[in-house]
Amino acid sequence: MGKTKVLHIIDSIGLGGAQKVLEEILRCKSSKIDQQAYALRERTNQIDIGEVTIHHSASKYSVVPLLRIIKKIQSDRVNILHCHLFRSQAFGLIVKILFRDKIMLIFHEHGEIFQGKLLYRLLIWLAKSKVDLFIAVSKATQQELVDKNNVGKGKVEVIYNPVNIGADLIKKSRENCYQIGFIGRLDKVKGCDILIKAASLLRGLVYKVVIVGDGKEKARLIALASDLGIAESVKFLGFKNHLSAIYDKLDLVVIPSRSESFGISAVEAQMKGIPVIASRLPALCEVIGHSQGIFFKVGDENELANQIIKVSQDTELQKSLAVMGIENAKKFRSELFREKILSVYQRQLKLINQLNEG
Image (cartoon, one colour):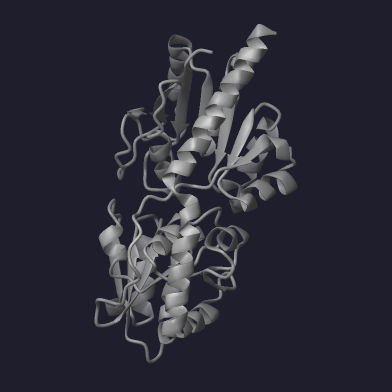
């Protein structure tokens, strides 16, 4: 059996969970695996995830990257094309049609399937017979692909996202107020506005909301905090690459998403022994654990505010959530993720060899 040559394509290496996952995949080292990555466009804010070729254009619509990918596949004899996010998957489908059985096509479903975008659902419908394997980041994501997009369950493998933040001892607040954290992209789907509205209802609690992340909603969120009269209690830190020191100061992490396929910051918080309150979404309940977190109705700032008060006042509950959260987070260790990814590549290469021999 020859060496497996994998080419990843991703829309950009901007700020997001898919980029973090790709970074971890590129750390998978094996004498039998050779990996490359290609980003289809530049972004103003980019993260450093190692050796990635970036197409030097900010355009969403250029087809030049597709032509370069085809040339790279031919010159480097790529076996597996691993696609992350919509545009990459659209290009991947075209490549699969051109190369057919000479290349294996993997779609990594990071959560776009939950957002109800008609173009994306159309792409999945067109591609499902051509894609050799879908990787789903949770069982809830797998179920969405199977139930609502008619993808065969045997074509979908669940591989949970890896989480890297080191575990810590259960801690007490190091600040003179209750520190509530939000870590994520500032996009409507992530629901940071729900947290800010809930914070305005926290009567009698001395608190600070710490928002870590960047995105198109930032200006609107700053205005919302000001309009609600809590601007001094809401701190926007922007995007941060290194989060361990930030988590160390938090008493609570809130995941107020309107839609979610995994929730990396929830597991990062649990690894640090920090209680988590999250929207009652299937993927979040699955990943956090039904008894390892506290949940509220999606979009309901009143219930969220009540749950924040409840956790802030109950030290026994805080300790219980911390202990159970640390145990739950062990399921998402990077070593387990890497083993599963490498196993997928080896299995796909065997299939390629079988087809070629046939």
